Length: 148
Image (cartoon, rainbow, N blue to C red; front, side, top):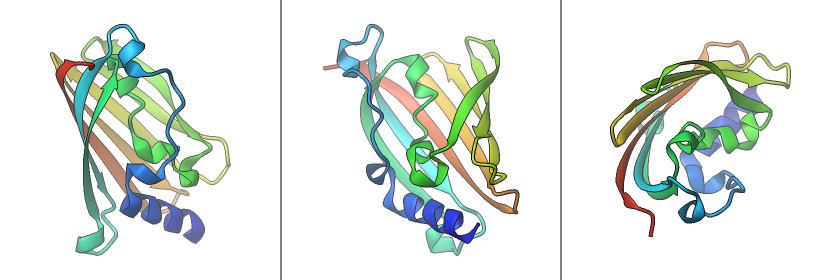
């Protein structure tokens, strides 16, 4: 459990640059792709103040459906056996997901996305190993233009 927590902490401090990139075709070639400004906030409430909150901003070409998989923490080695499964898609405005992990380590969580016009907001909440150690990632994405 301490190892998993240490990996998560290291990933939060390193940010999305440390997570392996998802292999996908260039978004500019995918129909419907738009250039989004994506702001990702990551919080670990049980840490000291100066370590508990990190914010990363990036510009990326993605489709609206790909936004649901932009939680970079899920690409980190500490959660490599976890994925988000669609739980409930209420409408074009909201989708809920359950975090499913195959490793038997007790990590659990959920995510919710809301879509409104050119703006999308998602939050991933994770509880590590069945303990009271948690973290969250909140993404605010705003379409800024067509992909270059």
